[in-house]
Image 1 (cartoon, one colour):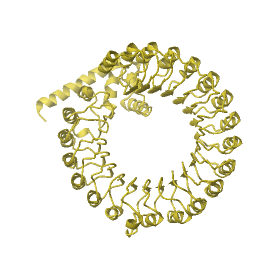
Image 2 (tube, rainbow, N blue to C red):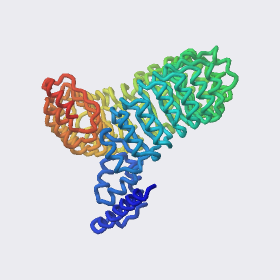
Image 3 (cartoon, rainbow, N blue to C red):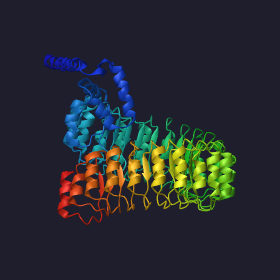
Image 4 (cartoon, one colour):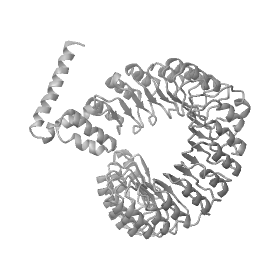
Amino acid sequence: MTSDSLKNQRQKHNGNEEALQNSSNSCPFESLTQDIIFAILDSLALTHDSLSLKSFSLTSKSFYYLESLHRKSLKPLRSQLLPRILHRYSSISRLDLTLCPRVDDHTLSSISSLCKSRLRSIDLSRSRFFTSSGLSYSVTNCSFLVEIDLSNATTLTDSAAAVIAEAKNLERLWLVRCKLISDIGIGCVAVGCRKLRLLSLKWCCRVSDLGVGLIAMKCEDLRSLDLSYLPITEKCLSSILRLQSLEDLVLVACVGLDDDGLRTLKHGCRSLERLDVSNCQSIGHLGLSSFTEGSTCLRLLVLSYGCSVTAVAAKCLQNFSLLQSIKLDGCLVTCCGMKAIGNWCASLVELSLSKCSGVTDVGLCSIVETQKELKKLDITCCRWISYISIDSNTRSCTSLTSLRMESCTQVSKEAFVLIGKCCPFLEELDVTDNEIDDEGLKSISSCSKLCSLKVGICLNVTDQGLISIGMSCSELAELDLYRCLGITDVGVASVAQGCPKLRVINVEYCNKVIDTSLRMLSNCLGLKALEARGCPCISSVGLLAIAEGCRLLTMLDIKNCYNINDSGMVSLACYSQNLKQINLSYCSVTDVGLLALASIRQLQNMTVLHLTGLTPNGLASALLAS
């Protein structure tokens, strides 16, 4: 380092010290030590509230300086601002560019020259317009990179993979949908990136057994490997199964894998904890048994949309004494198969039978009566179960924290009373399209830890049931009332008053909901998503209340709310600076309203179908202003 650069650094440091000293005379917080301030910033970072961090940094000059010194991760809105931002935040080690769709080689060159060896992680999964040249700048200057996400970079070729191979310290790499990268490029990565622990090649359709085999041979520290939708066969699996540290293997829709090939494998992977072979319909119990032989550490097994689950198929589960979670979504499950699952599995914590045909009361009861430690159960669209299953489930599995049972239409309303009485630890409940009524909701309100409740298309639910929820479920963060036609402002107001932690609410097509509901919901300061599609009585007056009160709002759906006009959009532009997604189709918004929305910097997705007041010139002006 030259004497001039040392002198500049001293001057910069002295300037910062002077700023701290000068501001100490005017700000009462200056007596706080740097460690205490950093602890405060750590707590604010956990809330993911960018406005709080901004407010903190504007308190004083010293806070402004310390906040920039403390920040380690950055998620900028525009790539054009990166040079200026990175000059201020000199300690950035993680850069998330998912909000910057245009990142060219020049931008990557600027990033690498400013961050240099400090940068550890960069996410380019939503960015375009960069090439292997831009990646070369990053890899060369940022020699300590451990994480790169290049998902959806569909134009990158093997030359880009060769550049990535120069990142010798790389530990995590995502190449999802990089469809032009072939075995040659993956071979370069395998040779160069020996420290890889996580690799995702999902939808890399040109990668075959050869490339995967090279990865398995060279990257011996791999812990997580995603090969979904690759044209691989059993030829590369023997190398993969020899990886001594592999814990997570995902083989979704690998159609080249079948029983005949898997039966040739002589051993499984002893360290494997999670295996996903969903949509592999050619893999039956014989292939699975050979594939997992010796995998005694297996904890999660996903067989969704695969072969039928019979007693013989379920018998292979007896080898997995540590198995805690099974997902069989979309499979044909026989009664004997369900009994075998109950008998062979030692202690299940999670069971998913969503959209499984063949699930009956007899089969489900045989599982829950033996698996008493079950905490998560998904029986969505199991249309043949009845009160009997719910009765057995609630009596046996009293530790349930999550129950999903959408469209279990044969379950009577009396069964839902049992859920509230017997499952006090419930945190998530989905009873969409069921016969639940107010008595059921009153019982469920005793579940004081309830965070998520979905009662969409439950036509027997009225305000009385919601009042019970509002009075007792103060932890509620998500509420779905889709097409609950018996709900009015009274019920919504009760929830808004009693559930201050509410983050997401859906009142779509609740045609009795009016502006009063929105005014009450505006007191839920943490509200992030409001879905009010098809509520014709809501107007711009109610939207103003939401905009003023719910400053963290990121998603808004007001399609078919005819009484919302330009004044509502102006309110959003003034107060809802965190808004990312909005649907205002069929509203009474014109060019003026759309132009106002264009001023919201974080807005990424705007749906504007059938706006009769919108002109081509107005749309063009809004696009140019955004």
